[in-house]
Length: 223
Image (cartoon, rainbow, N blue to C red; front, side, top):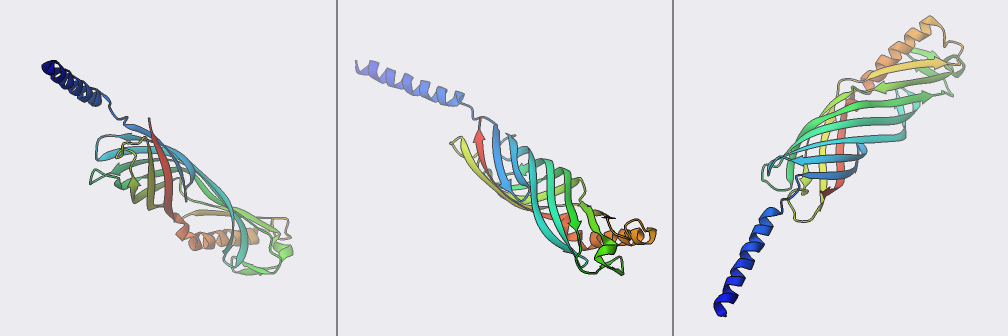
C-alpha cells in the first residue's frame, strides 16, 4: 500500500511538471498608452528575453496660444502617427533601451487677427492692412526616437503589466506657410513677399519644435 501511494505521488509530480512545461507564455501583448505623443494603442512581440518589437498608433490634438516674431497666434497641435520600435532589455528584466521611429502627419495650425500694429517681414502694418493671418508649422513626417523605460509585460506572471518610457523624437527644421486674408494688403505682391519672409522667421524661431520630448505611460495585457 505504501509503495502504491509513493508511486502515485511520483506520477502526480511528474504529470504536474509536464503540465507546467506545456503552458507556454504568449509572446504577444497589447498596450494602451497615454503621454506626450497622445493617446494610443500598441502591439508587442517578444523575440526572447532580450528583444521586443513594438508597433502602434497615436493621436494628439489640443489648442495652445503661441507668440511668434511678436504676433500672438491661436495654435492647434495635430499629431497623427504610426510608430515602430525595437526594445532592448539588456538585463533580461523590465528595464529597456528603445529605438524606433514615428511616421505621420505632425502640424501646428496658426491663426491670428492682430488688434494693434505688428511687424510682418520687417514692415509695420496696421490691423486693417494685415487682416487675418493663417498658416501652419509642418514638422517632417519621419521622426526617429530614442529612449529608456520600464516594461514588465514579459517579465511577470500576471497577464497585466505596466510600462513607462521617456526619451525624445526629432525631425528636420519645420516648414512654415503663412497667408493673409481680409486685409487691404492681403493681395499686394510686396506684402505677400513680406509674408514669406515672416514665415522664414517663424521657421527659425520654431526650430526647437523639431525636438519633441516623449513621456509615456501604459498598461499592457498578455494574450
